[in-house]
Image: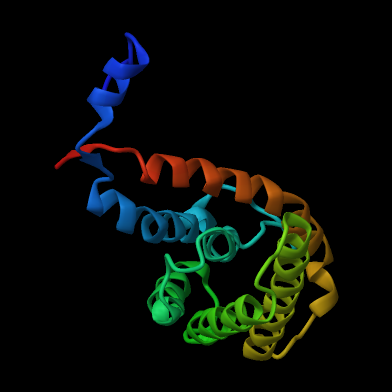
Length: 183
């Protein structure tokens, strides 16, 4: 770490010259945070209905909306695969839905070049609602008992927690860009 910055502005500038973000942290942090959020299903929350929001999917949306070029278009495939391993959903559902989300986000980026937080929140809310509806339908088909109305509390919690998730991603983005590597 660089340590505390003390001294005149000129001395502080000299300490920061010839520094850049550490490449492993700059590239790997979004991937690692999404994968760690996929493992949130191991938490000791026991409920008779789904109430825990899809944290990994929300992280994917937040990273994709905050830094559109950070995650490539094909990132939905490996991240969806990793989420399928931990979420308990039928295998392949995460791969298909996360890949479709990345394609939809690419279309949103092309259509709306300048977006604000409200537009991002609205787009994320619609994508989260579609994701939760489709995953509950797929899970219901797997057990031959579809109940898409059960996801209403999960959907409301997800939409309300999305700004908190976006704030967390903004903090992680600042950490990702710390000038740690000496040139």
